[in-house]
Amino acid sequence: MPEHNTHNHSPHNKTLLGSRELRFHNRQESIYPNLMRFCLDFKFKVLQLLFNAPTLTAAPIKVVVMTRADYSGDPSSAITPAFADLDQLERYVTDNQVDILHDYLFGVDEPTETGTAG
Image 1 (cartoon, one colour):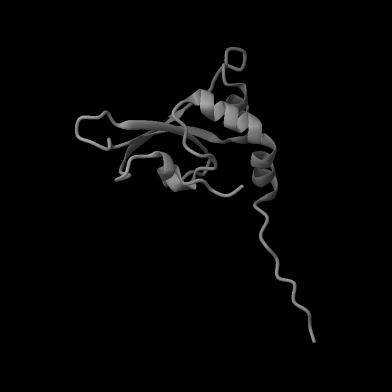
Image 2 (image 1 turned 90 degrees about the vertical axis):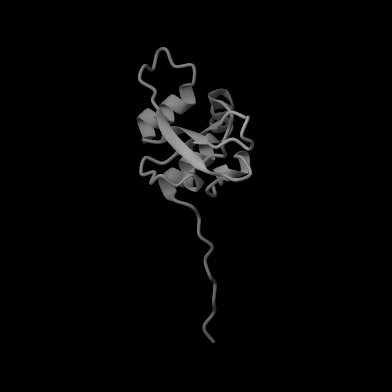
């Protein structure tokens, strides 16, 4: 799966104000079982990103994304699109878990050049 640009769901001027990691601790009580499994078993992170508001009177915009454990602070390196809430992110991860895990375990397929010697 290609990396997703979280700025597609952020305000026009796209200034990241901050981020925090959302942690999943209790397997029995999790209402987001796939997010919890990806974070605990595969070391992914779920981050809430805070972007500045599009206008001075609006509240800052919060979105959630999933990243690899080696996330370096660049929101464009998220492995999922940005969503308004955890319910939407859970649905996306549920629907795309095979592709996410394939890329995690085997890497993204790179196109190969097939040249012939002649």
